[in-house]
Length: 24
Image (tube, rainbow, N blue to C red; front, top):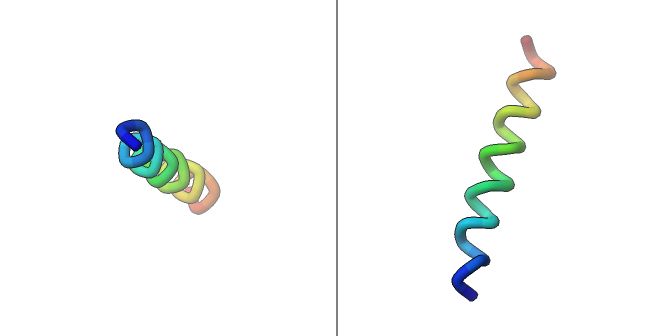
């Protein structure tokens, strides 16, 4: 359970970077 929240934040962070890379 302790890994669940950091993992979600990490995935969100990666997604944001991925999207920003595609839009630039």
